Image 1 (cartoon, helix red, strand yellow):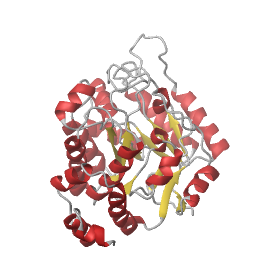
Image 2 (tube, helix red, strand yellow; image 1 turned 120 degrees about the vertical axis):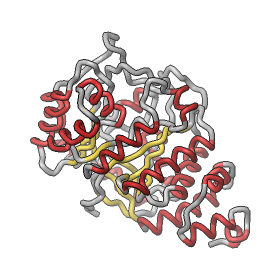
Image 3 (cartoon, helix red, strand yellow; image 1 turned 90 degrees about the vertical axis):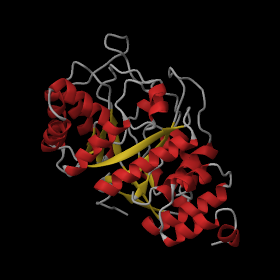
Image 4 (cartoon, rainbow, N blue to C red; image 1 turned 60 degrees about the vertical axis):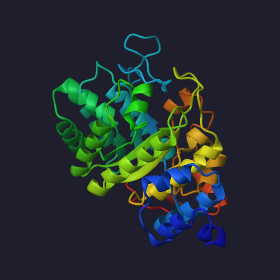
Length: 364
C-alpha cells in the first residue's frame, strides 16, 4: 500500500479496508466526493482481490424480452409501449422456447435472462408455461427471470401473494431473479423518475421472499441521471442491510443511464469518470456481496476492461439479443462471442471464468 493512501486523506478508510472493517455512510460520501480515481481504484482492488483474486466471471447468456407492453411509465425507459400503442409486441411461450432452443444450438448458451413490461393481458398461466417450456429445452440451463416489479404486477393481477407467485415459478423451473427495477431507492428521487413503480421497501421485501425460498438474486442501481451522492450511498447501504439479513444476493450491477429515446432525455448521463467511481465505491461499501458486475453494454467494452481495476470481478454475459439498453441508445455489440469475451479479459491481465449466475459451474 502506498504511503499516500496510508497517510493521506483516506488514511482512516484505508485502515478500515485493510482490516476488513465495514465502511460507514459518511465514508461512502467522502469517497464519492473525491476525484482521486487512482486512490479509489487501489482501495477497491484490495477488496476485489481478497474476494475473487484475478478471476473475472462471465456467462453466455441470451436476453429475452417477452413483451414491451407496459402499464407503467418510467421516465428513463425507451423500451416500453403502452397497451394499444404502435410498436407493442408479445412473444408466445412457444416462440420463446424456440428462441432458447436456437440459442442453445448456435451459441451453447448457459443462461437465459428474461425481463419485460407489465402487460395486463398476460396471466400467471403464461409465465408458468414460459418457464416450463424453457426448462424442457435443457435441465441445466440457468433461468433468471422477472424483476421484483414484474413479480409484484403478476401478484396483483393473479390474486396470489408474491411468495405464492415465486413458489409456483420456482416449481416450474425458475432458478433466480435479475436485479432490475431497483433504480434508485431514495423515495424523493424515485418518485421523480418512476412514480408508478413499486417502492424500495416492496422491492427489498420481494427479494427477501425470493431468498427465503432458495432463489438467489442480483441487485442493480441506475445512476447518472438526477440522483445525488447521498442517493447512491443510501441505495447501496439498503442492499447491504438486505444481504446481512438474507445472504441471498449474488451480485450488484451498477447501470449507467442511457438517455436516447427516453422521456427524461439527456439530463445528466454518466461519463467514464463517474462509472469508475461508482464501481469502486460500490465494491468498498458492499462488503457482504461477493460480486460487482459491470454491465458493459451501458459503458462500452474498453471501459469494461478498465473497470476490472476498479473493483469489478464480473463482466456479465455475452448479452446475446439484448434490447432494452440498445433501445436507449447503446451502440455496443449485441452478440459478443465467448472467444471475444475471453480475449477482452485476458488482455486486461485477468483470468476468464465461464459461469452462470449461480457462480457454481466454472469453466476456466
